[in-house]
Amino acid sequence: MDPVHLPRLFPAPLLDRLTASVTIPPGAAVRPAEVTGADPAAVEVLITGWGCEPLTAGVLDGLPKLRAVLHAAGSVKGHITPACWERGLLVSSAAAANALPVAEFTLATILLAGKDALRLRALYAAEHRFPSPARTAHIGSFRRRVGIVGASRIGRRVIELLRPFDLEVAVYDPHLTAPEAEALGVRALPLDELVATSEVLSLHAPALPATRHLLDARALGSMPDGTTLINTARGALVDTDALVAELSTGRISAVLDVTEPEPLPPGSPLFTLPNVLLTPHIAGALGRELERLGMAVTDEVERLMAGAPPLHRVLPTDLDRIA
Image (tube, rainbow, N blue to C red; front, side, top):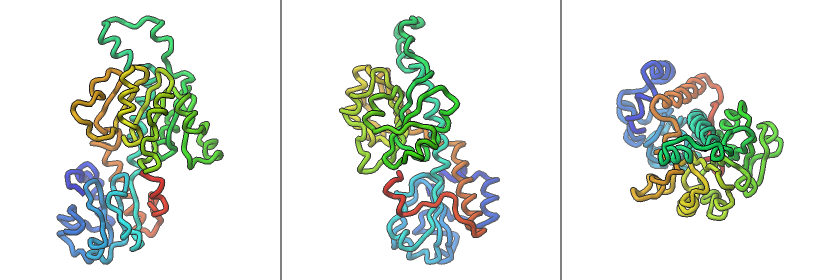
């Protein structure tokens, strides 16, 4: 991984716990193809993170005893190659730990959306007075419908966090069964109906060929007036040009932590539209939150050394459904 992440992922007390189970030679935090401080032929476990290069067949040939790749981040698609599956490597990810701050960020923005905070903030700045009751008659989270697109780890955690509030939560996910929706306590809806009836729409689907521009001009145009779109997933889920056109009317609002492209070009209207809260991809684990990812990997190491099954194993059959 990029060594810049190490101090936050594994602060000293956690690193001590990790090294009680495995030996981490000096200089091990480098490219897998250039392992230093240890004999590559002796390496059994790779702990990877952001910045890891693809583990190609050539790289794996230099690591003949490798049996596990434990990823201290979310998606493994950037570095796990077909050669890893062919070798039968155990692959694990800290995606579940990374899901927690994303869900917390989403919860905060859903509650702000219930207060129509973006529009009222702009009105206050322009008029320097409190809004009239007529302008606030529509606000509040009580019985507001929140639509969740994607019953992923993050989507499910958002649903869980929303339970204490008087909200109506509905979800679209082509892989979600009726019993699963019932267990989650949500109503499963087709995407078109969810988009057309939700007052807050939050995206938690993976970026796959099938989900590219899931929200196109037609879908965005079907959103009710006053709806807030929240995207903490991937920018490719939304047609950016169509979104800019819809937001420019002032009819809907958006909270965008991810965009397409990313970062946006300096002249993008999304930087200046008053009904847009644009943040620089901060919903996922950052700063102090990185230690949670390191803890997830340390847990996996301890289970691996004890001969227990991993908690967060990634299988090749998962690839068509995960980010």
